[in-house]
Image (cartoon, rainbow, N blue to C red; front, side, top):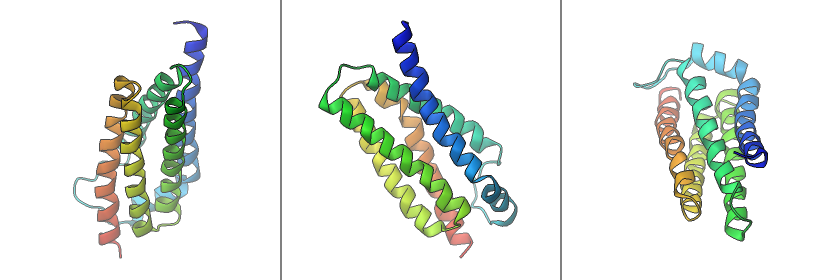
Length: 158
C-alpha cells in the first residue's frame, strides 16, 4: 500500500472515530445519568458493549469511505462522500439529542432519518464499490437495533 492510499485510510478512519469520540465526550454525563436512571427495554446490551461496538463500526465506516475516496474523481464519488459526511453529522447529533437533551421521541425520529441516510449511502456506495457498501451493513443493522432500543426507552419513560 503506497503512502497516499494509507494516508487516505488513516484520514477517513480518523474522521469517523473522531466524530464518535467527540460525541462520546460530549455525552459522557448524559450517558451516566441514562445508565443509572432510565428504564430500558428487553434486549438492552450492557453499557460496556456500546463503546466497543461503536468503535468497530466507526472503523468499518472509515474504511468504507476511504475505499470510495480512493476512486477516481467523479460526481457520484463526490455525492457519496457528501452523503457519508451528512449521515455522520446526523449520527453525531443523535447522541446529543438522546443522552443530553433526553428528547427520546425526537431522537427516535432523528434516528429514523439517520437509518434512511445510511441505506441511501449504502445504495450510493454500492454503485461505486460493492465492498464499501457491504462494510456499511453492520452499521445499518446496529442503527436499526438502536431504533428498537430508542423507541423502547421512549415508551418506557414517558
